[in-house]
Length: 183
Image (cartoon, rainbow, N blue to C red):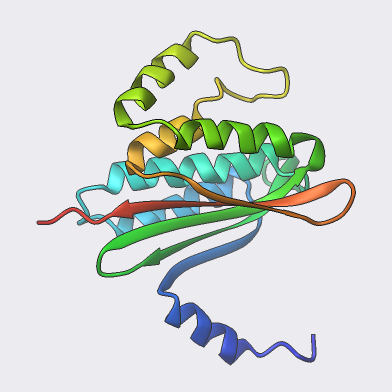
């Protein structure tokens, strides 16, 4: 830790327009607190409901699917560990999340994201309604609609990167961009 420079870290965050950053165990309590901060920060934005919805989806992905887990005393259960941040420029908002995933799930996740990114908005809408009727996968905590919903709400492709950590785990990074609407 002796090489860590907090001032340099602060300046990098400032340079990259990061306005909110959280790294750690994502429990229900943390989700609520960060959610309140987001609503206050972006309350004047027309897209607040969509931005907030995507934040919730990304945070829940970390909470439920991260391969790195910690025990949450408040929630009295194991929750996922990850990172989530917001950045803002004159033209857009970005929400970026990251968490460990099992290497067993790498190709499945990449396949889902590639499929979603290949669709236009109308095709996404049709795919979403088709997926509503599909039985959830065994490991799924929901209907498997999260990635589709994020792409629909942002009206953009989901940028992703998967970095292998070791033989068992990789790190999944998701970037969702919202182009600011003109007033």
